[in-house]
Image 1: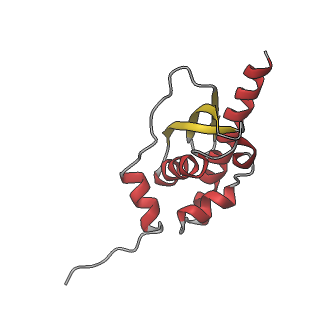
Image 2 (image 1 turned 135 degrees about the horizontal axis):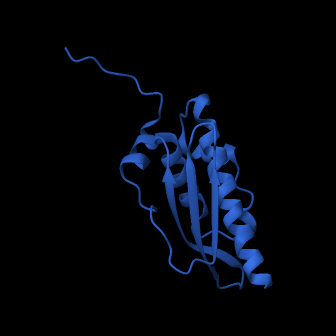
Length: 135
């Protein structure tokens, strides 16, 4: 009889961690955000490419990340990319830690800070985009 070890993570968290689709860098990104957590050592960098949809609204056409961190940090990075890609910037700015946790399913409370890191880094990249656009 095999012992089944219970994971503190949902199957979705583990799937995103094992099979990331959005990891990487966008050359000539329209916006770049970088945030780190000095307590746990996680670091995240997000690259965005912005385009306009048929209505002329700015959307996140592409988004990539580079994350140094644990299973939760990498899965949170992947989740935020899935939540943001193809969406209007005004809607992407509303993405919160709660949205990332909900998308991931089961995430231990001790790892909630990873989802905060994701939301902050995404917002930082959008702020970078807007600051470059104003220049």
